[in-house]
Amino acid sequence: MLILHQAAHVQQWQSARRFTRHTIGFIPTMGALHEGHLALVTAALNRGDQPVVSIFVNPTQFNDASDLAKYPRTPANDAQLLIGAGADVLFLPDVPEIYPPGKDITVPFDFHPLDTVMEGRFRPGHFKGVATVVKRLLELVNPHRLYLGQKDFQQVSVIAELLRRIHSRVELVRCPTVRAADGLALSSRNQRLTPADRAAAPAIYQVLNDVKTAFLSGENADALQSRALEKLQSAGLRPEYLEIVDGRTLQPLAKLNGHPFAVACLAAWAGEVRLIDNVIIRESEGVKVGG
Ligand code: AMP
Image (cartoon, rainbow, N blue to C red):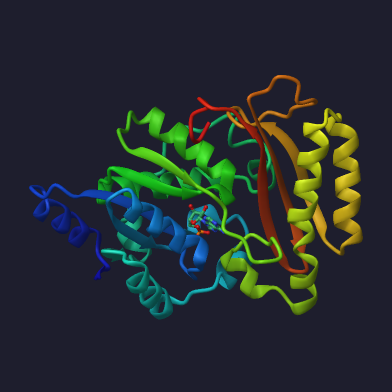
């Protein structure tokens, strides 16, 4: 596996492979890798792509300085995991490689209404930071496909919209959420959970599944939302939001009726750690990946 640290080296690698027939599958991450990330590498290999992975803890998507400072960083272990998973290239830049000093590369548009609901409401500026770094990385890596996890459902929607706005030909592939045996979605932030908070955290997935069952059976969102929030609280978690939304527009749904694409999304604090998760309630054939 080739490890590159500089943007210029990624560009050199890109131009050197101009005449190869291999397609590139790009997997952007923030490191502290786990099976969820490695599943994206496997998904790329399964489609015949050469997996290129980036690890970059992107400061512009953190709206909380202490979350950024405490974000786990394990580059040596990550590189070993990626070799084992079959990645071809690891791009490991530092901040000035992505954000050249004196140059403002912020995406000039926003993603309203996709970036103002849910995560966007609680983490102002987060998606502008995500879109900016993904756009910059796409320009450097120039992949055929971009692999993202369903775990960050709203991020997939925002990036799908980014690709539309910049008329990109990159194909977006949304991969299923990888979970621990007890249902907790794998996340780099799980490392920071105390044993008691780790024991409480599986309630998130249980509640999401209860919401899915109730909504599918025709219940109103209002009633089942307040029941779900109570359950999370009694499990010892502090929920920030639980929303049932249209999978394309991310706008709230009151009732399922004939909706082809409905998703339940939530964020909750387990002690000092903020966790997010979602389940797809219904996604009919023909609904495009990423909304
Ligand atoms: P992150 O390192 O958290 O920025 O995540 C990098 C990529 O891995 C994103 O596309 C995430 O959605 C994806 N990802 C993170 N956790 C999981 C998981 N448990 N299952 C599937 N994909 C995941």
